[in-house]
Length: 390
Image (tube, rainbow, N blue to C red; front, side):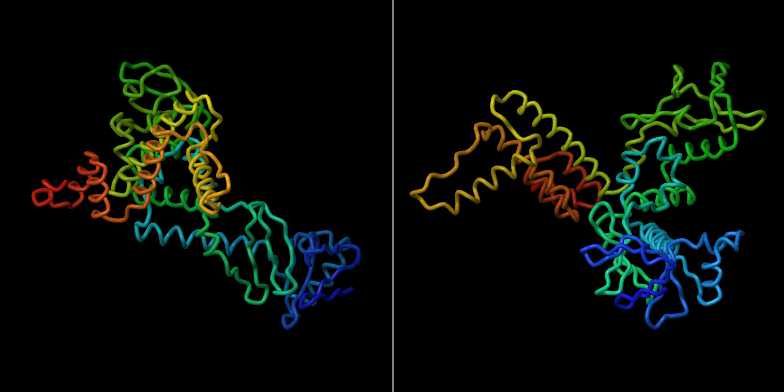
């Protein structure tokens, strides 16, 4: 039987397969074709069409004779994966990313799962919008992937990318490309080399400069650990003394210098230096805020951002209140010390939005920050001409 709704024509043996909801969409359906594309049958899974027991799947065998079967779930997945792959290549080719952002939170587990992490995996409900004749993947985060059965394209992937939906997959892809092109930091290249060496092995030996040998599982996270931008061994031995990872007569030699100064290895550009400084200032501000919050006898929101939003809303509301009406009083924690924290917060926001050397110069003058002055000079500032002004 065929159930027609809008431009969708649902093909089914059983009318009760469909359940219509108030949001004008179907939550459950199997096979359909579109008006004007009567030769193509869209199916969520074509497994029943490919099963060997053709007698049990007679309905699917009949459909095979009449339609070209297109598994739309695979098509949508492939479109998304190609978009991610193309976007990753474009970003890498144009060097349009920050090395510091790429590696600042790297872990051994992340390095081990790069090949998996580049593959997009989404949780969604499949629906149909009959008004627009589109297939909709309603994602758990509130976004939607909109597939056009006529063009067989997804038209809102760029919009979803700008909202950060594919950030994790692209980040994993960029790290893989940096490894493949030998552009990654030394510690990443060495860990990647060791990880490849460990594949399809059960155990390996760690050989140390003093002749000591330790047998361990052939898993990267059973050998190394990254914590606080420092690499160490899981064993009680010092990484500086590790000479090689061996299996039978093959080995990967270790130069401990490859694992030193991780922070310096991942900072390459002015942007990286600024991002690193912003993270440092955020950590310092969080410590100062937590200390102030613990010391005050008044109730305070949990974060400085929430505190600022509270004061900003209060002042906006008070501004609208006429003179004779009683205005809301400032909370007890709103003090000179808090306004100093607020200034630090605004300074961080300014640094996050710095675009060029002149912005760095302006901020260095305003804050008299010696580190920002050094950054300005390091990346092209005219030290002789500007030294008195700075």
